[in-house]
Image (cartoon, rainbow, N blue to C red; front, side, top):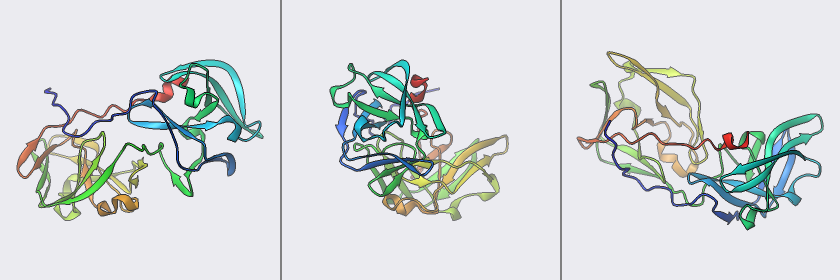
Length: 266
């Protein structure tokens, strides 16, 4: 398969980069406050997005138990921690950065995202992962026509769209539902979340004359206010369909390689 260079800006942050977090960060487990800090740091374990680093002094006393296990992470060494709140324990929930980590995060602790039930930046809950200060997401109305095909079957043919341009990802084209061929669409139970756009309200598989492809399209009926123009519109994965913009075929972008950094902690 021909590989094309990306036609969108890539990430610019190197692994191991550290910056201050100019926001109050709080984390709750089982309704109990685990940490509350205005001194958090970002650290990038891969270029896509950062992790929070919380000063050890801002974590509830006795909430972390050292497991006696050293980790080697991309940004430096660390000690694996169990989160313990009364009878509730979550092994491997966190790691405390060691002396060979970047100086700005020594004495700080990072948590696996799913080990904390609810994350807050100031008074707004954050989902999936921290928002990167270097990521920009724009939702722009466009009068350029968009046609979506797969296996030679037209799935959508719209005279306009809302283009979502997100740093490090292919441009997504959100289409009004009246321009989709719903006889080819089958709803699925899939739900995904995005820290910049919110939680999806629908996913659809696509049937062509020869096959059924799972979860090729999605919608956000109630997106975040930053991308409110996409509310109720439907987008397709550019990587998995044939997309035409003003009649011009667009190369399929390479699948986005999301680093599974959690594996390093096991």
